[in-house]
Image (cartoon, rainbow, N blue to C red; front, side, top):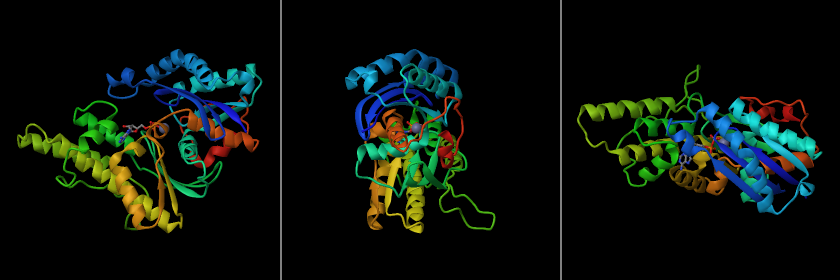
Length: 346
Ligand code: KG4
Ligand code: ZN
């Protein structure tokens, strides 16, 4: 049994959790959404400052909730890439300092690997190999999970990430931040077939389309043009629920097609979904239906494990520590790092 205290500060959530293998002993998430709402998106400097204020109380609270002391902790982990540099540094510095003081190993964790481990927390018998569709505010990736630290990226986004597209479309419809949950709620009341929108295919130089890569910036522009056209035609009030439903269905259809094609082409029968957009009801419905048709298994973690949290970071660290993977004290933070390079962290 391995017990890890994990810290996640890569974006706008200060999160600390204690995990014992795949069991969550405590998980604290202090969201900064209210702080960034007024700017319509995350302001990096504000995020770092807020992490600094919140990190120590979150660490205290995680130990208290788990009813554990530092003697019970085998290692201390923090997200070190990818993310906002200043924000990552707060978590990394806190984890390293605690590891030095309490003489524990320090592990730097890749944020996307954390999202993959959310599946193991909610489905303890789940084992590699499987395909992970990772859809968050910063990423849209199809990852072939082969083992701890061994990943192959089969698909990615060429421009906006899926969550970013939800946030940008919500902003142009004046719906607020973050856009995903608001659009999701409105979409349930609208007609997804009212507006035909482009799915965003990625052309290949030799002709045809990339089977697994996504592009959402064209879709976002199509929504913008449609809204301008509706306004010119004096369609007031704007049919917000139909726009939300049509946009959401287009994203869900596009992600579902790419995920199923990728799984079938690579003979992978299990699919796990992670990241904030995994909470989307349209995606959950479309992907589950399509997977059933093709005899594939799909797992969506519970909503609180889909969005950013530190339990997923601590769970990944438990697996790495068991295999003897420990980070050097010289390890820094990186704003970008492909998931295929996870093992450079140890
Ligand atoms: O994984 P996450 O919490 O943070 C990142 O690592 O980016 O994902 C946040 C993203 C935001 O863009 C948010 O709008 C989106 O996930 N999101 C959703 C839903 N809930 C959160 N998108 C669509 N539908 C949802 N229900
Ligand atoms: Zn994330």
